[in-house]
Image 1 (cartoon, rainbow over the protein chains, first blue to last red):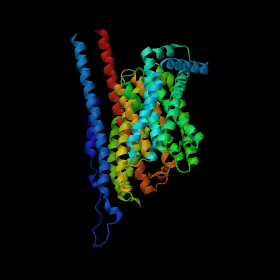
Image 2: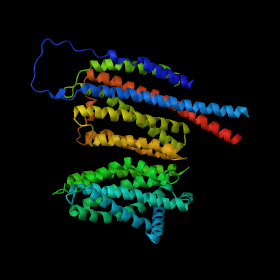
Image 3: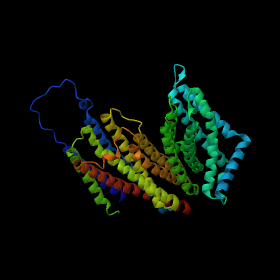
Image 4: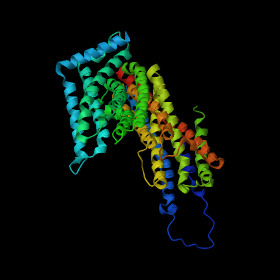
Amino acid sequence: MSVRRILIAASSWLLLAAPVFAVQPPPGQSEFVPVETLPPSEQLPAAPYLIAAYAFVWIAVMFYLWTIWRRLNRVEADMRALEQKTTRR
Amino acid sequence: MFFRTAWLVLRKDVAIEARSWEVLTTTLFFAASCVLVFAFAFVKEGQAVPDAAAGILWIAIAFSGTLALGRTFERERYSETLRALLLAPAPRPALYLGKLLGMLALLGLAELMLVPMVAFLFQATLFSRPLLLAGLLAGGTIGFAAVGTLFAAMLVRARSRDVLLPILLYPITIPVIIAGVRGTSALLGATPDEPTAKMWIGILVSFDVVFVTLALWTFEPLMTE
Amino acid sequence: MKKAFGPLVVIVGAMFVVAPFLIARAPYESTMGLIQKVFYYHVPSWMAMYSAIAVCGVASALYLFKNNSAADRYAVSAAELAVVFGLMGLITGPLWGRKAWGVWWQWDARLTSALLLELIFVAYLLVRAYGGPGSEKLAAGTALFGAATTPFVYYSVDIWRTVHPKTSVVPTLKPDMGIPFAFCSVAFILLFVVLLQLRLNLAERQTALDELYLAHEESS
């Protein structure tokens, strides 16, 4: 039951992890305007950092869910082993 | 009853220490070697970096304090005297206060040695405002020792206690150390910055109040098994 | 509480799907541009961490003073989540700062104290793992000190002049930034609740296993 709960949680995360459609591309330019120096805002592109930040949050949650799932499996296995030992006697 | 118990615990600790002076001398020597190690680490062109004086002073206090805490309570653990103390019909917070006073005395003696040593080695004008410096040292030492005594006492029966004490102690007391360092370095400039030093003393006092209150409150349940 | 779990998972999942759309539609901030949008995940992570610390602190106090073993399970679960959400905040923050301030890290009041707060709860987990028997109480004591430090962390940006934005930023948000922010905050706090339930379940199974072991020992 508890393992099932984990599976529900994990699969709903996986199925719903589709925010790719969110960002719309900007409208096309009509002419190119030259500029001498790169403006400060272009010198370090922001998008990689933004994506890395969001990705890290998602990965951290997934990883944590995975550690809970792994530990839960170990506890359940130990319980089953122990119950087998007591019923065998 | 409360203060009498604390006083008795303090007297007991001082009496035991007075037999061999083991913890005191080794703590003093460790503090001195700490300062020397850092002094050599920060030497440039044969001269020690002057701005490092405040930081090195407080690091030496923190490190030698941690060591002294471990050693003092190791002595209690070895003789099982802590259990005897807890069995005594004495208010538990008073036991904590007695231990804290003992720790403060030890660290105070270490600071008596450290401050002139740092002032000498780094040409630091630590004595320009002695009262403010004393206030900073008192505030910082009380904050550090309050948390340290509590954690060292509660770790006496734990496994891996030697390494767990710094792990628990430093994140909580680093704000106290930072306040001490910033206050001390405010006093070390060409003209000592008194308002800043006083501000940091105020912050240290508020840390002390919170930490001592919390420690007195939690000492009893933490020491009961 | 258990019956609400399934619907809660669905709600949280839905909120996290909707959130990027709301965030993309929010206006850019005038000085920071695109990177400011990390804000919608960064601050809610810290809000979730503060919630975790509050739960851990109260549960630790209950465990220390009332010997309530259920409180101990809440304390350890909340402490783990405090570390997880704190790590999220400590990674998203520097990624934002690298672009906005040009440096990965600054030793100012907010960043330093936030890092120390994270270390206090990592220390909590270390004590529980390696402290031997009776370490639950020691960890509970640590958690209380950690919880006492938290207000200091929060107000540090208001007391000292630091490069980090002040706490006045959030209450003065305009609606088109405020609504996505509130939405993400609720999403993160509900995420905390969901993860807490999962972790609590694990803690309960571990307690059941320990009791089985004890019963097994006694009968043999």
